[in-house]
Image 1 (cartoon, rainbow, N blue to C red):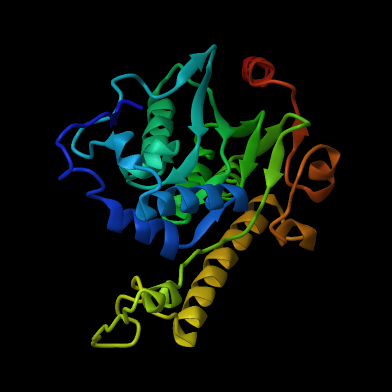
Image 2 (image 1 turned 90 degrees about the horizontal axis):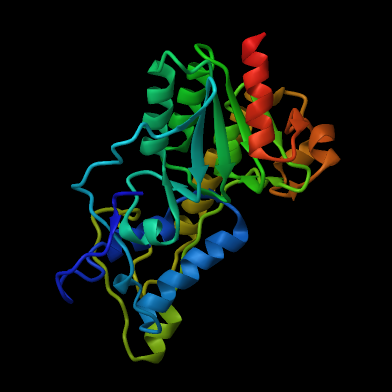
Length: 295
């Protein structure tokens, strides 16, 4: 992505977005694979502990524009739009450093393809463990609406999980290779209670609030039962939106196993109704779609 660049500026610039990134990773609902969420959290905590300086990596220059190209690859009459990496909205340097996929850029790429008279169909080339809930439902709704104008199909050779499936199943049809991983339908939210660690250092965090839910979970504070309940409620509400979307796109009689957060490969995906078929490679799949568009 052209927005990703090394940036100078010395120590003053390093980690300037860290509080924002901390809030995103630790206190917001994510629709993402558990292991990837763990990697993001651990990378961030290494930086906080001083074990690693990830600010030496890539920064996102939010003032810069996007790529000058069309945002998709035209193969015959099929536009292939890439949706790869951790999904998010207005991604920071940390999310881009970890391999990000911005929903606004994906939307722009699809819009360009829809306006291109040469394009008869769009294939979403997905390789993602999921990502942030923020921005995902809106992009999914856009994909579903756009698919009424031109056929949109989702395909993965590798992984279409959590938020990536949220987006993928919004397409008219979903295909994958037989060894690809698909599913992980659910929502997770991480938080860290550092109050005991602060006590061991001889500190006690005092916060004076206008209301009990203002700026919850600050460093060094013990998580109250009210905060825990609120976070759990938020996760469940986001998950229900996810479940409702999948049922609407894939059918209301889906097996309950689809909503356990598990993921699958092979024939079980057909049995569960999560995909419409298999194709070994993206190249083969795009070739088949091109043939269909000629009929």
